[in-house]
Image 1 (cartoon, protein in one colour):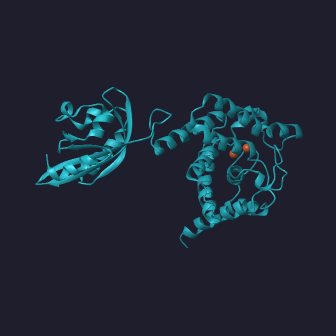
Image 2: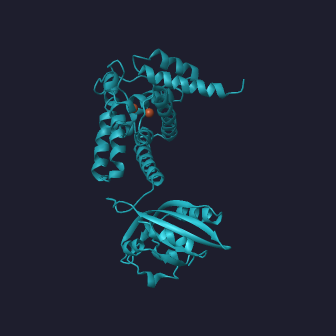
Image 3: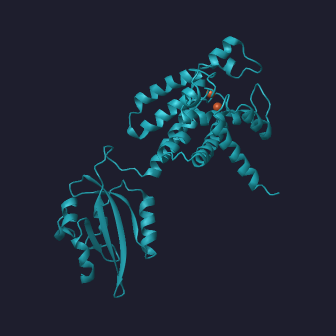
Amino acid sequence: MIDTLRIFLTLADAVIITDSNHRIMEVNETYQTITGYKRETILGSKASIVKSKLTSKATYRSMYEALNRGSSWSGIFINKKASGCLWHSSISITPYEIGGNVYYVGIFRELEHLAEGVYVAEERRNNIQGVLLKVLAISCEIRDPAIEEHLLRVQQYTEQLVTVHNKRMGLNLKEDYKQSIIHSSIMHDIGKSGVPEGILYKPGPLTGYERLIVEMHPLIGVDILSKINIELTDSFFKDELSVARQIILSHHERWDGTGYPHRLKGTDIPLEARIVSVVDVYDALTSRRPYKEIWSKDKALAYLKENKGTAFDPDIIDSFVRIEEMQTDRLPS
Ligand SMILES: [Fe+2]
Ligand SMILES: [Fe+2]
């Protein structure tokens, strides 16, 4: 055992020292207490003795890539104790070259006990949330084959608008909230699944009665969402679904208080709904619908500007116009 590495064994965290083949050369007291493995029984074993199947392959891949380059690596592992219980830890591994040999020093810090039982990396969690909401949104509107593109475009515009508006207005929105708006924007019209096709895809103007039915779609959507809510009690989705609820319920409210279903006015309309209302209208105008032709981008932008302060939040329109200007700036002259 190389004496210069022994100093690490005095750390309060769990420490493991291995040779270049990842065979255990030494562990400290904390490592033995946490894992339940006695030093004498594991010396010479592979460090993977504590491996569970729950750490992703990508995590191991990134670890090996870094270590093979001679760089240190840190990440999250879900390991297994001698008792079979899972153990979530944040780990940093550093390679040391001493006398021509490479040694690895791994320092584990146990993560707080997680109510969910299994640690899920933020990125993976975001992905699961996004995919699930997308599947829900598309399945609710499966009757319209063009809808998927509309929903995805609304989501893309929402992402741009949330980012630019947050920056331009100095709102300091939390990352989780921004992500929830982006994910949930795709759900805005799930209530349309409760509107008869004959009305939804009617070419030409709607009668007063038909319009009333269409205008029920935010309330129908919230009803669908409450049913989903009963099933999805997992805390992963709690924030996501509350933002989705505001978007579904209020994306047809108007800044001047003449929208539906609740005639909310100004900032009483949740920010997420004010944002989605702008991009939803813009995309609807610039796409072909059974009752209208495609509008040019310029014509649609002019419409948004005309309705700034009546239908739409003026600051959000300014942010949206800024995005369009930024895109035009990038075009070759
Ligand atoms: Fe809608
Ligand atoms: Fe829409």
